[in-house]
Length: 110
Image: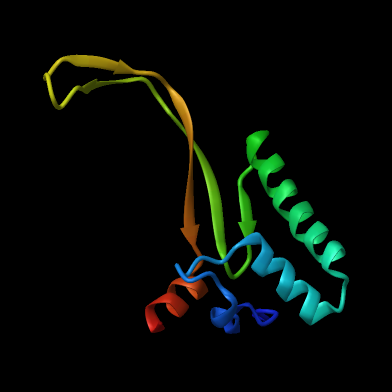
């Protein structure tokens, strides 16, 4: 899997170790030679398409990275841990992420 240099930008990430949109745009800029504005636009469009797909109920699979899965949870009875009073929890849609085997292997290796 080509990583476009993303795995090697650890020095460019914020001090807290978070990869940001700006970091991704910078990698696109350096590796593909697009302008910084075009690179930021590419990153924004990709994220927009992913968000839109999820918002209309589609799962998003990025090969070699993982899958964002939508799941509908039914109504259930919960309990307030402080008072012990039972309260209904409304049905809702949740998103989960399942990393691909390739990603899990890379994370395990450090």
